Image (cartoon, rainbow, N blue to C red; front, side):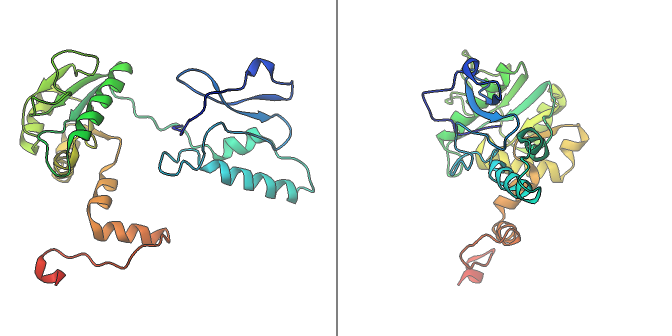
Length: 250
């Protein structure tokens, strides 16, 4: 899970009583992030499960707790195993295994793709390299951090080409990546990825979209679809109407 960890202290798991065991462990420094009782419906989390403004991977912990309380009450006070409750709530690993990944870079600075996408793209490349993945970058902006000639954030191959469907297909044909990242390059990369998906290009070469899916990109880019999605989940929003020109908006 991705969590919003923000603490300077952790439990020494070697000192836990016999009925307690670790529940969450930080994969970076291996510090304890939560413990659980092996027979009583008690568990802890050393992070913010609701992660307001951050990742919501562990928001299910609240539902798990409520379900444990209800089931314990229904069973005349017989406690529910935390392990069983967690196994029922946890989703299976759906990690996609790919070897070579094409990253669509930030390109020139403009509205919708400013310097923050240079940062996010370079961090994505760094993370992919740490995972041992071969990375290919497309970015025509030679002044970006992503396109530095040296450094840990440098891709294995860099193409100083415009991020357009035609040029991206040429790179795919040459490099044969099995995955592509669209969400690290700003508006141009998103538009390009959607166009290539709709044209069947990504399916033609067997390239899988990693991270934000095409459906999610379309839902967030189209105001009308986005409003409909919010309505589906009963989320409050200001009344709005999607228009395509100035006359319709008048």
